[in-house]
Image (cartoon, rainbow, N blue to C red; front, side, top):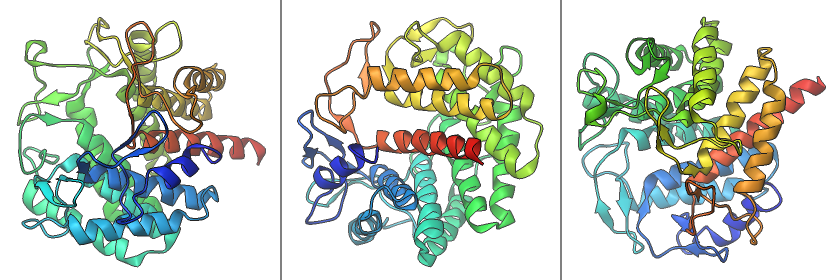
Length: 367
């Protein structure tokens, strides 16, 4: 990360004229600046470079983050929802989609938590408070949680999962109990709605009243999200002492049982009985697997530390084996062969989170 990926994205993936991040990178290691630009990409890259600055891995991390923030404030402020940003701009910085996505809002909150705690940016707290107020006033759902955003549609656990992550990051950064209270609301949603106690799986899609969709309507289970929730629940337990051991046990074991292939990677999607519905593997799923192994290792799970080492090895062998140092292979097909494609900038967030977790775990062992 420090030696190859961050320098590559800083040098080739940030547009000099605007400060914006490229949506993706071509296989030759050059940023692709022609495609439209989702603002969630900018948010994730602000998090990535703020975290890199915190670790001392990118001396220019502050400048990158501040440049992306200026870009957003100059071109992407939402005309209807103060404190939010539009969904997408084109390469000429013109708005091409002004919808607001709650999933995107979660990443802005996460990025601002790091700008506040790492860079001392007090304006980041103002931004976060304003965006939270907007979400509550405009997009609060019934009976609980938040709606998908301005376009509505089927409700998902995924935006809530990332709001959970952002709320915990803000509580850690500010010690303001309001953020922990918001996280508690999402923990309750996990217990009552998202997690299927009968089958021991986490569902993805829900009706407006948060009842799960039927399988025929498109229900799915993503093993990678099982692992992401294990890590998040352990974070929540760290701050609250909440009894999450059994949830983590079931999510972890079921995710491995249903999702793990012979190469140590996770399938993209299965059903609630473990039948593989999407046999491809994306990069983010193995980074979440690493985080879950380390989270369980902290709590004495037998073999989890060794499993984390094996998952890290699988990440390098299968996804970080490009001829261009710092480039990564985003997707493997059902036969674990690389699918030729650009590397999306959004995956830097996942790689950074896995790196941070591995470094924190190692530091704890040395204390």
